[in-house]
Length: 451
Image (tube, rainbow, N blue to C red; front, side, top):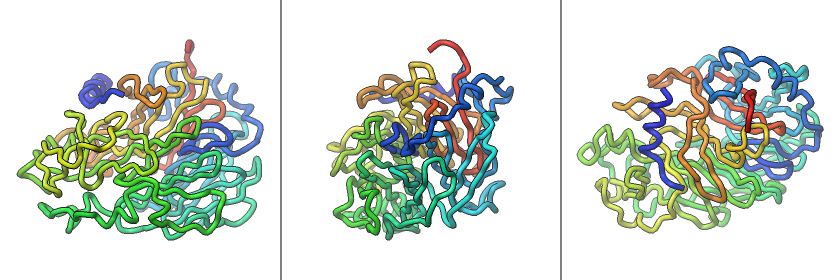
C-alpha cells in the first residue's frame, strides 16, 4: 500500500490548515489563546500501551493513535487550549451515521488521563468549519458570519453569548466552508470559496465558455482580511487580501505568524466538460493540489488558470481558450511551493512546532486530505494525512504518507467510513485529527524511541 502511495507521490512532487503555534498566535489548528496550566496527564497517556487497532489508523512505526472522542457530529476544524481542552466546530450534515447530530460547537476534556474525552459540552445553535482561540475568545465560522464567544481561562462553556465579528459573508451557492487564521495582533484571514467550478456561463456544463472579468472574484474565490478585535465588520473590496484562490479551506500562518499559507482545492471536470481536449485519465491527474504562500495583492489565477503538476506549469483553462498545453496569461502567476496529487481535497494545513514527535517533524507541515470523488477511472485517493518537510518557506523533500486507514482503498462516492478534515496540535505535542463523516477525533502521540 505504501509503495503505491510513494510511487504516486514521486510522480507529482514539485521541489520546494485549523489554528497552530504559540499562546498568542492562532494560525489555523493548534493550542492558543489561554494561560491555563498545561495538561498534567500527557505522560500518563503516553505511557499507556497503544491500542492494537490504533483507533483504525495506520501510522509510521513508533506512533500511537487513540480515539479521543467519537460520534460527536460533523467535526470540521478544531483547536486545543493550553490545558488540553479541545474545541470543535460542527457542521450540519445529512450524510453518514452522524446525520441527526445538530451543528454547533463542542468542547471536549479528558479529566482522568486515559487519552479519551470524558466531559463533553455542546453550545451554539449553528456551526461551520473554522475555529480559533485568541485573547480570551473562541472564534467560530457559522457559514455567512464569524462570531466569537467570551471564554474564561479553563472553562469549557462560554461565559457569555456570541458576538458577531463579521457578517454578510456570501453563502450559497458553491463553497461555503470558511477557515480563519488569526495572527497575534488580531489580523484575521478568512477564506471565501468560489460559488462555481470555473466561472462558466453555465456552471459545470459541457463546453460552456467562461466569463471574462469573472464577477465572482469581486466577492468570492479569495482571502479577505479583518480585525478579530473589532465587532460588526462586513466584507468589502477593500478588505480583499488576495484573489484567484478557488477554495482555501486549508489555510494557516507559519509558526511566527508572519506568513500565510494555503492549499486550495483545485477545479474539477476537465474531461467531463471538454472531452475533445482531455481524457478521463488526464482529468484524474489534473489539476494538482498546490501549496502556496499568500501575500497581499496576490492573484493565483482562478478561474482562468490551473496548475499542471507533471509539467510544473500553470495552464490556461479550456473555458478561456486553453487546450491542455496553452499557457497564455497564466505564465506570470506566482509559482506554488509544492504540488500534491489531483482532487485529494486538502482541508487543513498545520505547522508542527512541538518537541514530542521526532526531530524530523519539527517545523514541517502536516496536510489533511478529505479524499476525492472524481479520479475515475484511476483509483480514488486522499483520505489521509501527509507530512511535508519544510524549512524557511520551502519544501525540503517529497511528502510522506503519515496516517491512513480512514477509508477502504478506492471507495465509492460517499463510501468512506471516515474523512479527515481538521488538524490541531496540543501544547504537549500530541496531534489531533477530526473527521466529518464518522464524527471521530483521534489523538496521535509518539510512543517509540529516538528522535
